Length: 282
Length: 120
Image (cartoon, rainbow over all chains, first blue to last red; front, side, top):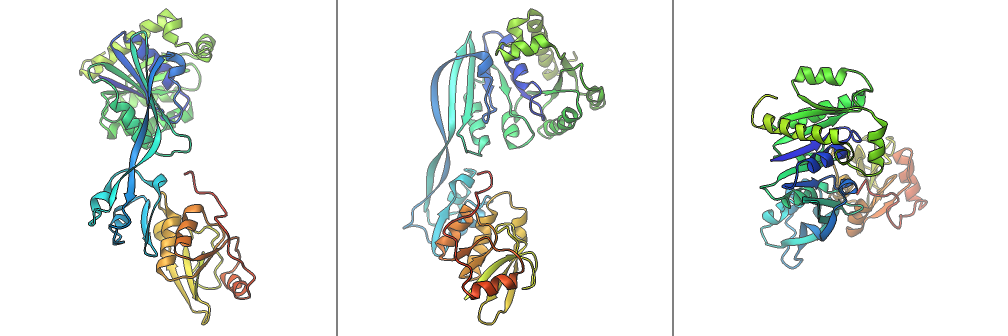
């Protein structure tokens, strides 16, 4: 089973939830930090890193002798990453999404796969928990291909927790698509609610069952809870705004390792998710 | 020679649009006759990326020998340079006034892009 942790709004507690959930799963689990623009789950898991790999994506490499300047590649590219001008052909690798359309469209066979480095992937372990995260190259804008690579590194027969990036744009889609369940972490504030609604709609389009965690649940107002009731989204956990939790966080200590009652709550959370995914009531 | 001016409107009285890639339109002006053809740039206004590249291509395809605009980024500049088109940046005000200055030799071509690319 793959459980993704997403939020809409940033800073609601995705990493707090993802790391504690992964650590409460026991030995046969893995955590994939897919927030490749700002990976931080390792600060809590503190894995021993084993290997680092460089990740590239394909970009067009032109054989200038074969190219007839016909412009078919330019016509097919939705990203303005390749064009013919003044009897030359120009490419803009930083705009390329690596779809391979230009190569498929080229009638002269003049386009090969070049490579552009987009980031790195690191693997590690901590007390039997497999850990993997991606780190986007600084200045790189193309997060989804790296996120897909990070996800391809997880072992299918282990329970997987994915820490997704904030927002509801392409990187989030890449991180939560084809997961079995998405845990949406929010806070009971107007911003939290606004972005939660966007995240819920996103999960609906992707047809992923979802559940809610309300963090800092004793601040703000009741509109998030009312929205969840209206939309029939189960509220699976409420985390109060407590100084001790914030202090543990600031020291990089997962709440399940500091407070035994939170380990039990996260174990219950996983049991609830299993039941929901199996179509049972909780 | 034809000069392309990025502009807000379709006549020589129009204001220069200081954005090159996302200008409303380009005025293609024959410097001898001062005849003016307006080419719309609408398709680039909502482009997610690469607006400058496509705008530069439009200008090249219409046979311009020089561009007068406000700001030109690195990718648009690279395309214009590849096609041998000189780029005058920092222009503003009415298109006809800038063209008059250009004819008088008061505007000199930029040696490179004068603004950064957008977020990539």
